Image 1 (tube, helix red, strand yellow):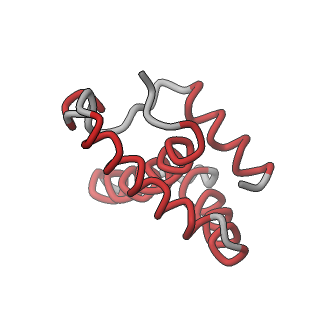
Image 2 (cartoon, rainbow, N blue to C red):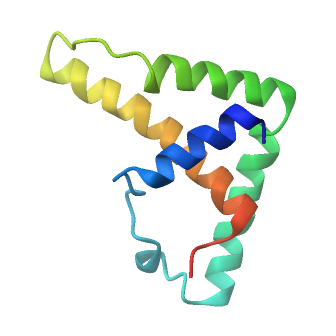
Length: 103
């Protein structure tokens, strides 16, 4: 993972953000389920660790996480939150692929 993406992951992990689903709710105390989750994270990593994937993710971070625009409506705010959360989920999957599921 590129240095800037490492920084983005670190900031995400230091923030109060967490994945929508608590990992315990996914049954990740079961080694088989943990392996499936980590395999999915590795697939995500193989996509976003390519040169094109890194450029795409950097663009997404710049447009969906870093741009601070005042939404015109509640619907627009929800849409922006959704875009940002997709990027955060990708960053979290990259972290899982690199470090495994937290114990």
